[in-house]
Image (cartoon, rainbow, N blue to C red; front, side):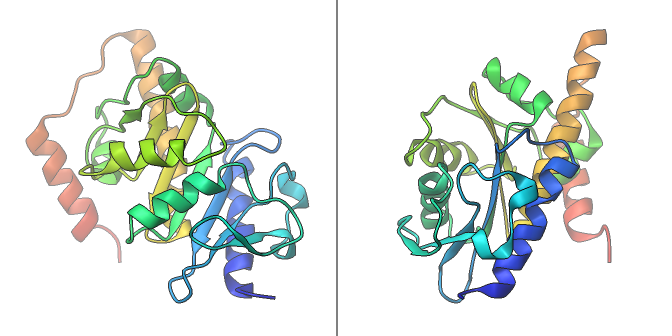
Length: 216
């Protein structure tokens, strides 16, 4: 069986999505690209998270052709593959319909940078891409379009949900968790009034500190 370690990692990370209340039923997925072979491990379509195993993950090539697996790959596979082809530094992708972030997407509204946590993690607002149909590369094209030139590892999809990217699948999951967390806080603040935006120079200082100084 190919890419056993990557299968195990992607399977483990899928559990983070329901654990962090980012998905419901079978919606949402995680994928990871193997840096050596370029092959991609992704969730099987329509399988409950509790039923996922390393063995029922699906392996595809960068054009979404199944290389190994007895089940159909996620309906978002073509879009994941498009993002990987167009963004060579990306090795992990997550898709969720997390509640507060998806609420912003129904308005076609980006999440404004009004929290230090947003400046840290996203380097500015979380942009909202346009509407795209599920099943082909259309969503992937919108994600690439809106994230090109942006420091944000997350994009909202109008009337849909969230896509996040990362240097690996773990960092993409982190971005998905953080996206929903800040979306919930900003949404709550909007019920009370108009949130105060951070100044661009403060966003820059916070982002640089978090990226190059914070942590071990």
